[in-house]
Length: 251
Image (cartoon, rainbow, N blue to C red; front, side, top):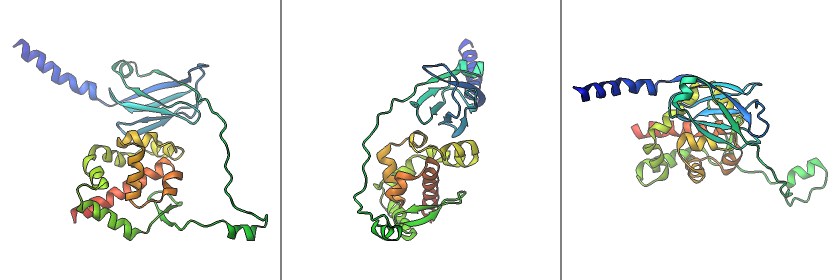
């Protein structure tokens, strides 16, 4: 009977620890202890985002053991785990450190320009890339290949179980479900529009830099896009490719 009671209370206590709560925090400079404005806070587990105000304050939905990525240009990114005491107290203070920058050499492309716009515009080669639209974003973006080849890439993934794209989409249902959550959270979408470091993408999808490059290439996005698109554009591109994959897999 004693063991039954312990087991019973263990079961009913589990939901309390996994319940989603709204927690808050303050982000400060590790050296000056001054609050930091416009710092990005992303809950990697729930695909939720927030940004600090002028007092360094933010609120975000989370549960125990969730990982928060705290980042901003000019500061070292850190990962913070949501603990039981944070959930209980509802607030916490996070300290981040400024980056030390060194000046790098600037390389000027070897174009022999004349100073006349009409002449110089013909001297600089144009990249032969296509343009495409990502749902929900008005601007057009560059792609290296046309859509028929993108279709062939996805088909080859379905036919070849060893293909990287097939394995990625087939083995990461949990991570890819976060892409749906991403579309629901406007705070996170706005936040990702200003990010280019791919840190959030690596954590959200549990991939590394090499895997991300290969996924974009298999989904027929150009190297230029992979290097210049913001994090939101990259995630929307992968999401679109995943939707194509699901449709073709059903067929």
